[in-house]
Amino acid sequence: MLDVSTKWRPEPDWTLARLAGPNLTIGTVAGLTQRLVSGDVERFLARHDLGKDIGALGLAVGERYVVRVARDRLLVVGISSGELADGWHDEGWAATTVSAALRVIEAKGDGVRDLLARGTTLDPDNAGPCAAMSFAGMMATIYRHADTGSLRIHIDRGLASYLWEWLECQPLLGGNGEPVPS
Image (tube, rainbow, N blue to C red; front, side, top):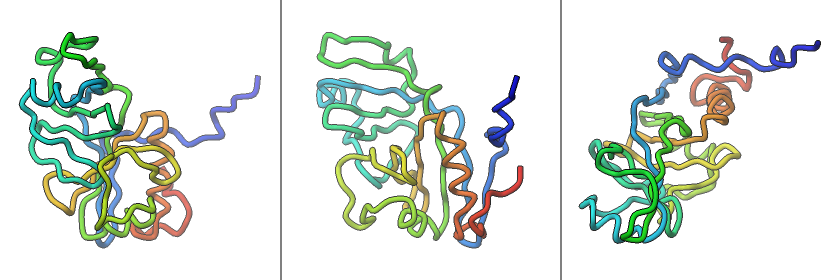
């Protein structure tokens, strides 16, 4: 039988995956607790005292924060299942753990703005209220973390290898359009 798996490169070892260029370094962030909250998100925010959610290219600070991904949906980072049980809540919202479904890639450095210009048509100086957007031809959740020179990209795990290969090919990282050999 034909082994079609040989057509594709193996997935990177995400614990060691790193890319670096003159003005940009890219790696992965492991161990983040990620939850989707849908429904009455304003009541959710008030109930958990999380403050304001951030939108596209907003700045998230700290270990716990909330990113807007739709009108009635939030990506909540850093809240454990002990603090927030999965399922429907009588206050009018539902929570789902998605930590295993999303890979988080982080880019840092002066080249972040150029990376954004290559990956999306979003104006970095006039970002919108929703952090879910098309990036490198696929949907991702994108915001800044800790400082304006750090960008986090939450992507479906099934698409993470594609995004990584796309990143490897970028001239910002010294790529010449060809993937870096693994």
